[in-house]
Structure formats: C-alpha cells, structure tokens
Length: 102
Picture 1: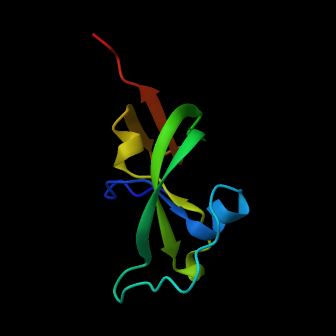
Picture 2: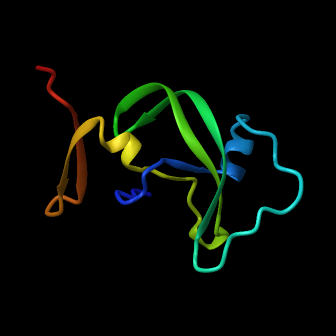
Picture 3: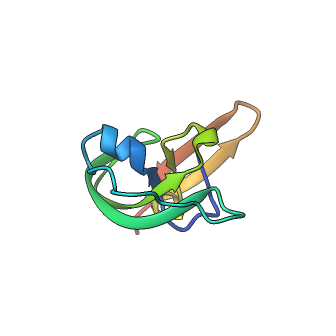
C-alpha cells in the first residue's frame, strides 16, 4: 500500500517474521485507539525492490498492522523522495523515475 503522507516505510512484523528478517516479538503489541498501525522498532533491510527500483540498506519501521488490512507494508516518503513520482489515474499506475543529477 502506498502512503504518501507517511514519513517512513513500514513493514508488518508478521510479514518480516515470515520472511526471516525478524523474530516474532514476545507478548502483545497493542494498536493504539484511532490508529491502524503501531510502530515499535527499526530494521535495516539489505536490499528491497519497490516500483521496479532496488535500494540497498533501506531502513524501515517495524509495525503491528490491523489484521483487517491484509497488507504487508506501507511505502512512505522515505522511498518516494528518491524519485520523481507520477500518478497516472487514467491508466491506474504509479511511475517512479530516478531524479536527475545535475
């Protein structure tokens, strides 16, 4: 899921545990009322591919998501600020192009 208002990319702790990047936390991580996620740690992923672009050593927030969401991650501004992002509503696509250096 894309969340252009989120400052950080968040990954569901259950997904990270399933993928072998995280040991499941001991005890319950409650989600605060009025929120759908609860951030509680940071994790450095060695490599990640998002929108066709690979980023090495990408730090993400580890979060507990409301299970009703059924998603593994929220992609935030820390990813998008690296690219020129175009939302093409007519085609239903998100295009991320590397920023021009110069």
